[in-house]
Amino acid sequence: MLNWLLANVGIADVVDVAATSVLFYYVLLLIRGTRAVQILTGVLLLLGFLGLANLFHLYLLGTILQLLAAVGVVSLPIIFQPELRRALEQLGRGGVFRMGEDPIESRRTQDPAMAMIADAAVLLSRSRLGALIVIEQQSGLKDVTESGTQLHARLSVELLLAIFNVRSPLHDGAVIVNDAIVEAAACFLPLAEPRPGERRLGTRHRAALGVSEQTDAVVVVVSEESGTLSIARSGKHTRPIEDEHRLLRMLLAVTRGPRERRLSSDFVSRLRARLWNQGRQKRHHADHPQELHT
Image 1 (tube, rainbow, N blue to C red):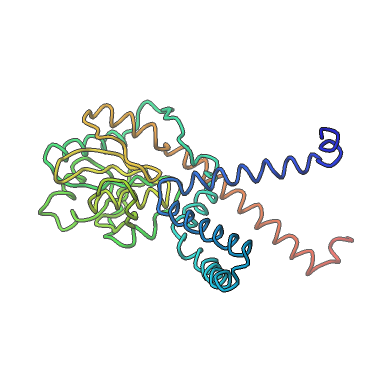
Image 2 (cartoon, rainbow, N blue to C red):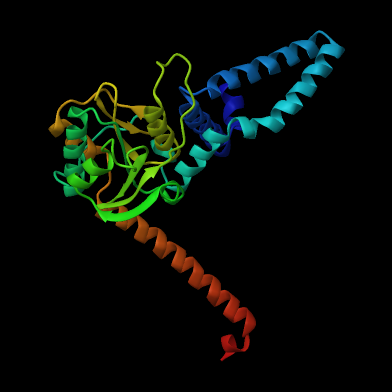
């Protein structure tokens, strides 16, 4: 048996099996805890019944199951649209291999913007004023900012308290913060789908989960009913946070500093410019081949 394996299984086969296993592993991580698990279970049961129908020559049942399977294949991209969007977005920002639980390790010891957000969030929590503060990371949130009122104002504790005051016309919605700038207020966020076995969440917490599922944004949530503080990240809520110092440490741990975001953006810009220049040079040489000989 060992000799047969050595004779018929090559390095390419081993790499193929390993890559497929890794792919299935990350797909399972992606759909873990979502309604896609139940849908995938139903699809597998349907395929199992189809196999049994073919095995026992149940032609009528097999034909019906084949039609259902064909309809399911067409409708799967529509059903799994949120999961597919999240996977493609993570792949685009290079986070496909960080979908699991990554350890929180703070690289920064201070950040004025995070300190102001933590201070404002604690004050809002004590006053039981509901708030949604979305901290933009690598994923662009232009479509979200366009749904609200454009501010482009310098971040401050007083500004956040004024926005989320119940008498303010901008308090009902989310605030988008990019570096130390409040880009917009009263923004609408995508709502997360209810998850089986999970306690019922309010609209504010579902909105925080929704935007954190589809992007790498970090959301500070202040509950209007209980005044509890929490952070939404990667489609998950943290436990209630009561200490301002702990909130600041967690924000420093789960967010990127302005320099880190700028370096990543500069790398993408340089890569895009390099590819663009190479394409222009190729088109120029194709249009003027005589310059190659000279």
